[in-house]
Length: 53
Image: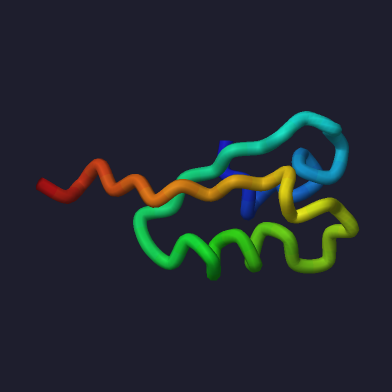
């Protein structure tokens, strides 16, 4: 699932959510949370780049 395409998934659950980003973890988190009235502590974005060696 790509959260930036489905932000309502963050809004509609009370569970913690983990997302991954290849770069700009903070920017990704801001982008996902834009226009959502949710506790930002529930979203953890981890830097994961499976294309790097």
